[in-house]
Image (cartoon, rainbow, N blue to C red; front, side, top):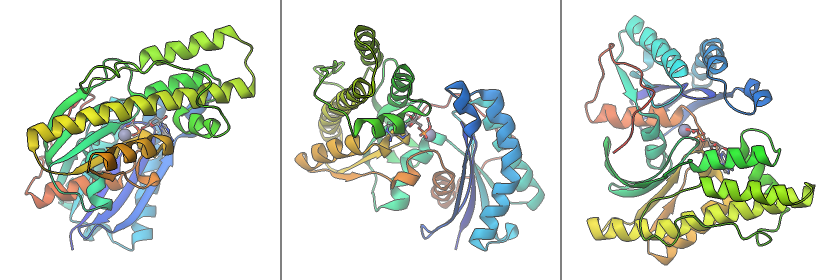
Length: 336
Ligand code: KG4
Ligand code: ZN
């Protein structure tokens, strides 16, 4: 049974996992770097150093938990971009060192492809499928035709959704990362109190925009004295506006997918923002109204992790992909 060790260091999670070909996650170690919280965002240099300190320990934990010995691993899969370049370099150099010393194959995995293929690790999802990737740095509708074959249907013209959550949370004084804080605060807020804009919702395409929404939140905050009720009502109204826009655009994306591919009935939501229950709920309804099966990873596999990298490695390995040890880490690496 093929077993791959995955390594992820592209942002502020140091992660190591061991996944086998039969979709068993034998270990999934994630160390979130809390040292960034005091700065209200990720500090790249701090992240790189923290990855360097954490990796050895996490690999030991993954081997111990899985009961797998290092020489029983068939290949190493590592995130080689896109991401904060210092962190990506740390992960790639570490993975190359293990691969070279053990004489094992190495696979350079695109972080976004890790998010894209997670649904095939946790669910039965056939190609082609429609993907909405929503993370801190990316917001894209893509058709996933096969491993390594992507067609971009539309993307954000400005901020990514996760970025909009993080910036709005900062305005509201809710701390970093903002997504989970806004979702928590929204639970006691009134989502109908503020009618925030639904940017580009009346354009029948897959383009998105979130910077105006953030500005609308800032203007609302300037009007009145901040208290807990106001904060939670703004958080809930903001979250509702984001979920509404994503729902409308998913409808258009489904239409475009059907006009191009005719069949194929799976929609996948993935990336850190896919953890949001309100967004999941709205998109699940859109899918059922349009005859699409809705898939989203379990919450613990929405955010950055290495199980998704190991799984993407398994998919690539099975297709005969392997990389030379001289591949370069990349800060930018778009899909499609
Ligand atoms: O995929 P991810 O872990 O890292 C990147 O590849 O960017 O995504 C992180 C993003 C952050 O912006 C975070 O605020 C957002 O995902 N996020 C959420 C939730 N949990 C994480 N956004 C909305 N609701 C959540 N529950
Ligand atoms: Zn990510």
